[in-house]
Amino acid sequence: MRLGTLLLRDAVIGLSQLEEALRAQILYGGKLGTNLVELEYIDLDTLGLYLAKVHGVPVATPARLEAADPGTVARLGREVAERHLAFPLGPEPLRPEIVAVAMSEPRNPERIAAIQLQLDATIAPYAAAELRLLYYLERHYGIERRPRYLRPAEAVAPSASVVMDRRRTRPHPAQVAPIVRFEPKKRAAGQAEARRERPGSQGAAARPGSEGGAARERPPRTTLQLAAAAVARAEHRDQIAEAIMDLADGRLGAAALFIVRGTSAIGWRGQSPRGARLSGAAIEKLVVPLGGSSVLQSAFDTGRVHLGPSPAAGRPIERTVWDALGVTEPPDEMLVVPVAVAGRVVNLIYGHGPGGRPVAPEHARELEELARLAGEAYTRMIQAARIERMVR
Image (cartoon, rainbow, N blue to C red; front, side, top):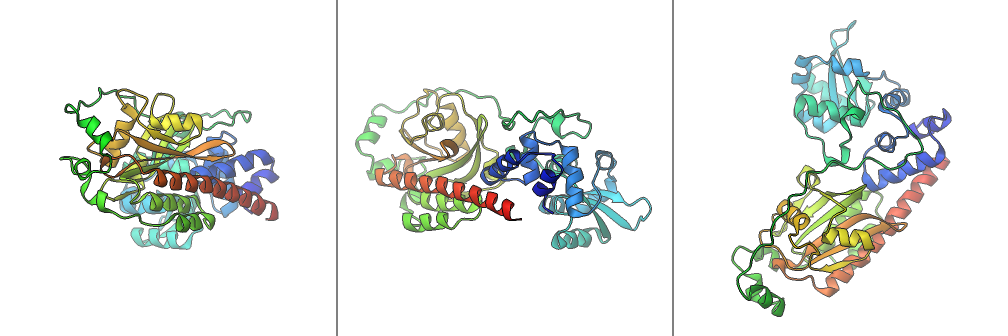
């Protein structure tokens, strides 16, 4: 029996709560249980107990996780622990030749085989919640949790006493660093005017220190038709992200795709001015607050495309994005395209033209159309998840 079905059967959650968690899982990733905890519909201890029931294995209790054997932790190693989302507990008390390991997928034969090979021992899988495992991987191996999985410390620590109020439905906002404000970068006299007068000139693209060069010469990677087809057949959020980045490649000089959660925009995919793709921790550490003044804020507030300069004089948010993407010469004009589901912005596509030039209007229209199709694809995937739950 699946986790959601079991929780419904035992009246731990309601149908509307399960559907909201499924929606969050499609939009933000993570496991279903993780989203249920983030929505505060269940706590970590309850989730652990039900994961153990689903998988038919013991639960890794907070006490057992706290008492993990340091020698076994060292033997498993950071790389294997991170790859398989597993945390070793140590030898079983009555069977010391067998090693207990807490896992997010305790019935996955490939993961079990890889862990046994690394430890050179038979393992006894234990069930543990994704959020709790990430907490211990960070604590013992120094594997930094990505902003997607950051929650208040008291909700993750094993000694926590979490009081759940099911009337609350908003997830915790991701933790963000304080905003550092910068003064606008001064340009040489007439430089900005010359750029606006000759947006497509060779001189504007070949400024010393700009990110022109190879980025300026890249042709579009794909067509709108091909990208739209990829979105139409997408079965996972990552496929939508890749289609968006493929369309941006060659149309934008640098690009970033954000997930909007609570009061923050969290990096999901990125592309440097020279065409290098950024994913995983390299871009997910980029977290900017929503609530100030920026091109991202403009598109988020209006739900419409922003094409133009930043409304903020110092452009602190934009500078954070540029630093993460490796942009050396700030552009005057930027494009931000929102992706919305049921009128709610869930993604933001940021970019500017090659060499810092303005984005071509036809390229902006193509990205806007793909964003519209991405919103429809998310809706289709959410509906499919509901149907699948009903027939199982």
